[in-house]
Amino acid sequence: MRIIVLGAGAIGSLYGAKLSKLNDVTLIGRKGHVDKIRKNGLKITGIENETYKLRAAARISKIGENTLILLATKVNSSEKAISGIRNLLRKDTTILCLQNGLYGENIVKKIVKNRCLVLRAVTNFGAAFLEPGIVKYNSRSYTAIEKSPVSAEIAENFRNCGLNGYVSENIRQDMWKKLILNCVLNPVSAILKVENRYIADERLNPLKGMIAEECAAVAKKDGISFDVDFVKEINEAIKDSRNISSMQQDIIKGKKTEIDYLNGAVAELGKKYGIGCPANEALAMIIKDMENKNTNV
Image (cartoon, rainbow, N blue to C red; front, side, top):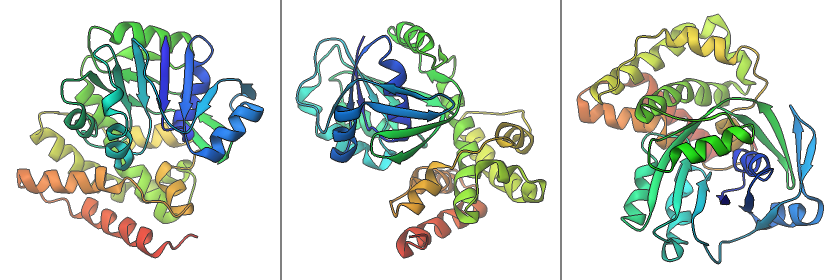
């Protein structure tokens, strides 16, 4: 399969490396990262210790037939990334949005219109960008892929590359479930400046419960219901995770976070449905203030 990974950050680089085992992969990233990969290969540390030889470039100049574009940028970079390749897209191109956030794929669909197929994917793989050319692989997970005529082939390919791909029966439910985890984990870990596992501390359960309950209430109005104990599930999922959340990584590096597409988006959708989300709104305000003050740099 011909694959372009658009957004060679931590997750994009990890996916590109794993997919390069069986596919023709090109990573699109920042010049420093690209130069290191071209010179030394892409080094993956952590769960595995391996160097992958694959193509890397700073921009897409051409899209061949039947290309899968794996969009792994931050959601707040989607518009710029896709607008830059809009005129290169083909009818047989598929864009798979492997991103966080509430309905982030709609940003892509608005730009692409009917030029090609746009699908959503959800994952919980954990990775950290250590330095140009080196990414740490922190935790294994799954890749849930929105149902479509091409999804089974993509999922099988991902499975064969160690990315546990499967076709989701309800991608919106998968999206909301991941979103609720992110709305709890990302801002709380960024504010407390800790590894993910410390958020499993039971003393934080009341806060986690407030955040999750607000999210679940908005999800229900949005047509997605859950019958789960989110606090228990989240604690179990992250209790051994030494991963640093993507939001905390962004704050450390002085970058803009995805808070507007996580807690901020839940609070905004809550307003539309007449549901108050004070916990999510407060977390969004705190993270925005941390962004503006660049407090960790």
